[in-house]
Length: 425
Image 1 (cartoon, rainbow, N blue to C red):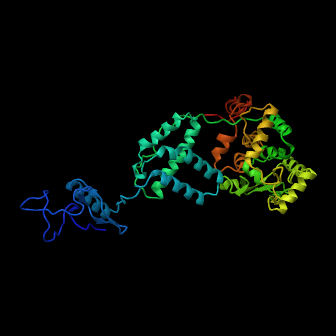
Image 2: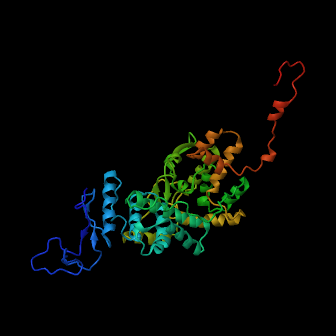
Image 3: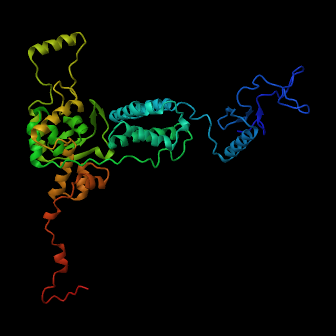
C-alpha cells in the first residue's frame, strides 16, 4: 500500500539507457533523455503505486505536476483509509444494469417485483444509458433520465415507478459494487406530480351486485376479500387445510403469483385471523359446489386429454388443496381473473375504476364503522404492519362526520344541577 516511487514515472524515456542509444530532442546536452518503446505514444507521466488490494496501479497524466499531485493524494487517502480503486465503475453502465438484474433474480422470490424491475430496465434504462460508463453517472443524468421518460408521454405515476427502479439500481452500484458515485446522484430529482389513486369506496349493495355478476366459480374470491380482507394473491393461494371451520378462522401464510407460491407482502400479513360466520358459509357453499376442482368437460375433450397424456403432451393438474382454481383445475393467475373481474364490475354498474383491492378497503372500513372492534383490533384483523396504514389508507375518506351525534361538550359545559356543590374552575 505504498508508492513505488515518490516521483512520477516517465514512460517516454528510459531510466537506464543502453550503450549505443541515441538521445532524443526532449532532453538537453547537460541532461540527455533516451527514448523508450512508448516514446510519443499516450500520456507521458505515470503515477505508480500498489493499492490496498495488493494490485499495482498505473494511472497516466499529460503533465508531471498532475501525476505528482495525484500520487500525493492517493498516499494521503491510503493513510486515512479513504482510498477508492480508480478502476471501479469504468465499465459500461448498461453492463452493470444487466448484472444487477441477474443479482435481483437470485435474491428476490417475489416474481412480480423481479418482472417489474426487468421491464423498467429493458424498456427505459438500457436505451437511455447508451455508452455512459458507470462511474460517470451524475445527478444531471438522473434528471435527464426523468426528462426522457416524460418526453415519451408516460403518466406521472409510471415515471415515478421507473425512477424508483433507477434509484435502486444506482444505490446497488454504490453499495454492492463500491463504485464511487456522488452522494447526490439520485437525490433532489424533481418528478412530475402524480395524483394518488383513491380507492373506490364500494357499498354493501355494490359488493353484492359484483358477486351476482361474477362467474360462479370465482364468486367466493369476492367474499374472501370483502369479508376476510385478503389481497388478490392471498385469495388465490388460500388452501382448504388452512381454514378452521369449527373455530371460524384461517391462517394466511402465502400468496400466489403467476401460479407459484411466494411469501406474503409483509411479515404482518402472515397470521391467524378470525372469520365471520357469513364468510364461513360462503366458503362451504363454494366447496360443496365443487368449484375447487377442474370444471367438467365434454366426453370428446376428456378423450383428447387422455391421448395427449399418453404422448406426454398433457398432465392432469395436481391437487394442491387450493380453494379457488382455474377452470382447468390449476392455480389461478391474475391475467385469467382480471377479465372476469372487469366484466362483473361493468355488468354490476359499479365505478369502472374499482379494483379488486378495493374490497379489502371495504373490509377494513366495515370493521371500523361497526363499532365492535377497537382500533388495534382493526389493525390486527386487517394484517397491517403500521397503525397509520389502517386508519389513513384503509379506514375511509372520513365522509359522514356530519351525521355523528356529538354530546361530549354538553356533558362538560352544562350548568351544574341545583344543590350540586361542585365548582368548575
